[in-house]
Image (cartoon, rainbow, N blue to C red):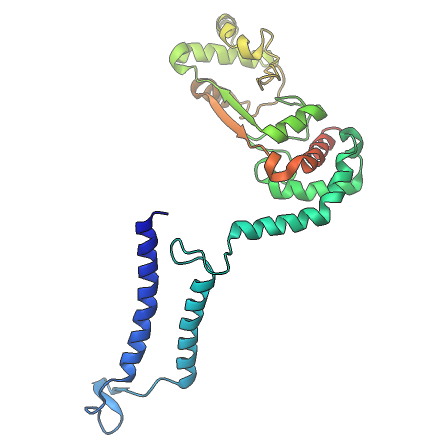
Length: 294
């Protein structure tokens, strides 16, 4: 935060507190000499008269108390620009303290899980219950509470893996994340070329397609083979999907595949090395492994 904005916030906050305090004091010292004998201000509308009674004492106490609380809070905690408060409190420090307490309490449990090989750990009911809660908090947002994913988010319960489903592959994915890119081919191939390639691609998974379009698409598929392989079975080293099965990340209808080839795709799996740490990454790898190896 710049000095200008820090000063602006300080002036604005204090000016508001001072302003309401002055308003309260000023209204208490108003001249009441012109007040009517019946205690009204003389204002009347439709038989309704405005009285000028003093504010209740309890209300004044609450009002002054709120002002004192505001000043005390701003003195102790962050709220006035760059001033951090005399207590030096920050949300980051509180989070770090809570995380340290959590690690102290549960760290030994995760250490014991981390010492167990993933295939064996995947059969540990207690470990999987713990992992299920971690999954719900960190992974279910994308992959769903049942881990079956959705359009653009992989299903973790089948045996189809873009980057491999071995324990080592799963640990690597969770630790470092993944960045998947499918280039757009509309400009270089043209609409007809894309349609031909898509027709051939659909034929790889056993669908009935136009034979002439598929034959033309097979010739164009050479540019796709660099990632997906000459046989279309993909390449887990770079996350290129297998085109010969019936599993489609973005949908397998012709219009979905056309969109993919026309415009390309870009997807990202975040890394969890710092969020979870190596012990919990090991546990989560076992959990994901268990989903497709029941």
